[in-house]
Length: 373
Ligand SMILES: *Cc1c(COP(=O)(O)O)cnc(C)c1O
Image (cartoon, rainbow, N blue to C red):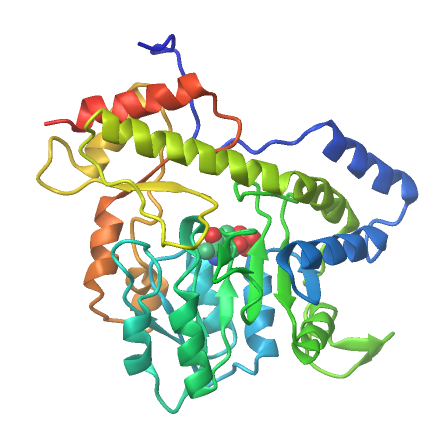
């Protein structure tokens, strides 16, 4: 038995902000250069190096990263972009922002990611890009997706907002085409709000940089319709400190996930632990189990029972993008059975780096107790 009891409260996520982050912000404040200063430039350089790419461009958040990545790859009105419906709404909405239409294909049962076997048949003469999401921190099948990308000459835009430093095919995510990252507080690292676009293509990098700052190259001469999607130096200063901690944090997430895998199996819990694609690394933005129907309890029942024991959990996502009101209004009526089943069965358990082994044990015991027949 563990020492934890009903007074326990374990949240689903607990962002860590240390002394160094606080000092970094104060340093920027004292410098007087709050925007377009050296912190953003240094963060971009350090993030590019961490991902193994030539260029990284800091932006206001992950959503704006996706929007600019699509625009810089020439996506616009009348185009189609193939993506997944089992993701955060921003994945689909960024495509809508450009005037293009998201085309949703179903996911793989095991990885929750875009099923590459369904991508090819979804390609039409209007298809302009393929946008996989590395959901929960596990890379999509980049071997197959890169084959399709090359065969049809379609750019890959990676929604890597949940997968900082994950590796597929021996390369960092965000290095396969144009990569998009988020630094929202609950992600594996944060800058408060923030985002980053990564690429090896100098033309894409240039377009993203220009679009980020009102289409301006020479001060007050605007060559194209751009946005104010800049990151502040205060946010970049936080991000730089967090980036220096990220590898260690990802390792702790992986150790916590391995512990949960082992404990849940040992205790005979009636849930499916998240499988990892062989040869890929999973950075466990979420540790997402499945609760199959017909067991001792269903997903919502387990969530409620954990709540009663002071354990936070999350349903990512209860409703797929194509079923959201915004998409219903646009006539979406897809049948995506694997996606819809995932929405009904998934539950994410706490896996953040600060969890102690007693807390992990308490979580695994609770899940087992509730789900064993
Ligand atoms: C968080 C997230 C985004 C959006 O990032 P923001 O920084 O919140 O704008 C996009 N896609 C996925 C998969 C995400 O998890």
